Amino acid sequence: MMSSDFPERYNRSLYPTFYDSLLGLLREDISILDVGSGRRPALDPVSRPSGCTYDGLDISASELEAAPEGSYDEVWISDLCISNPRLREKYDIVISWQVLEHVSSLYAAVDNVRAYLSPRGVFVAALSGSWGFFSVANRVIPHKIATAAMHHLLGRDPESVFPAHYDHCSFDGLRGAFAKWSSVTITPFYTGGNYLNFSPLIRKVYLTGENFIERRNWRNLATHYLVVAQK
Image 1 (cartoon, helix red, strand yellow):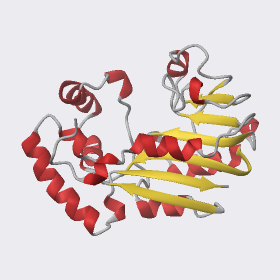
Image 2 (spheres, one colour):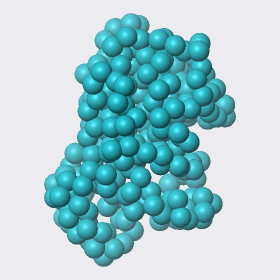
Image 3 (cartoon, rainbow, N blue to C red):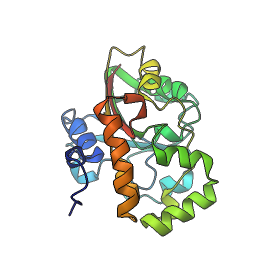
Image 4 (spheres, rainbow, N blue to C red):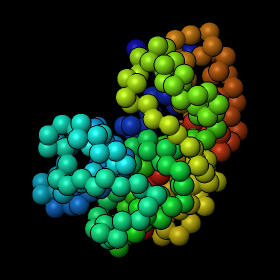
């Protein structure tokens, strides 16, 4: 049960919103590329429409190999920031769950996704923002220490924690990266309090500041973003 000190906006969490945005685009025989999900596909096989082609792209071969059998029809071991001509205009939808904050160049990654989409194709992406407290801490604290802390305090599997760059992962940064697209909707989320569930007192103090930021609509300081963009 959600603690009473969480504001109402926490009832609209990131993944259900991401999932709902994606479901509205699905149809039979569609082709989908899941970028960066590795061992955990962003869309479960049972949720995929009939005749759907579902491929996975990840920089790590071991991550793709660790995915359950039947997760992907085809896999591509590739850096999203490096163009792969074989994927040009191959997919109707590209999806990305908590990946864009990990790429070294947001602009290069977004341009490559656009190239991989068929005409009028759609990109659905959820990511962490550059200026959430956990994002700043992730850049300041050495990765090994941050991984150990997340495992101890949040119970996170160390294998699920990867280095992040947060390149242009702000509202204005995303608007710039998607400037070439025919349409884009960027929805900010202010929901960083769950990272502090280990300390109700610290969480309460944090939420006071986050509420202040959310009320003033300081979108560059959002903790997460949902992007839905059409080529």
